[in-house]
Length: 223
Ligand code: ADP
Ligand code: MG
Image (cartoon, rainbow, N blue to C red; front, side):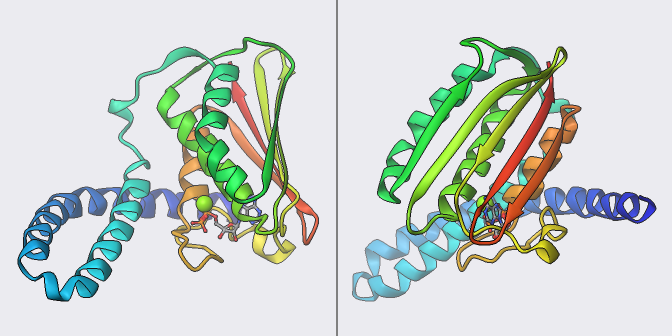
């Protein structure tokens, strides 16, 4: 237990540092992007180079936006939000991506309305991250079940159950480490940021996984 504590403290310092750096990088990136756009229209014969530059800039921006989600607490606005409608909105948002990947999203809830006290944009981000990871874990398609239930009187449980590639037991502990990714175009930040957000909400996340069978992510959030 002691080791885990030390590890998470290290992460928190690394996370703060990362968020600070990301913030500083954002402004120069905006300037670079603007001038690249201007150059693109002037040097049309080298469109191939500019396309590469643009896609690499996009990648940096994705990394920056994920790092920035490590968030400044003073910017968090907590409200009561119906987690059931939040999740059905997200399902609509990701439906096309799911269909393109032959993934069927099943959405199940014990009630039509379950309010939780949260920063709703951050909770959305968490759900999007877990659903995207689930879709990406099933390159040949499959079923993703998103289940909302009442864990106890004061706690909501959201389960993301996929039938994907699974995570090897020795890799489970790497989950949540910054930049741990097994994907060619991954950032390895989605899980860490999500875990951080859940913990900032006083919640916790459990992962169960079996190789070639699938993964279940359980998110407990206080109401
Ligand atoms: P990224 O998706 O950019 O790789 P994440 O932090 O979201 O970064 O996830 C880190 C890694 O954890 C992934 O690269 C993948 O190996 C593993 N992972 C996360 N969720 C799942 C899942 N549902 N099924 C299988 N592997 C997963
Ligand atoms: Mg991810």
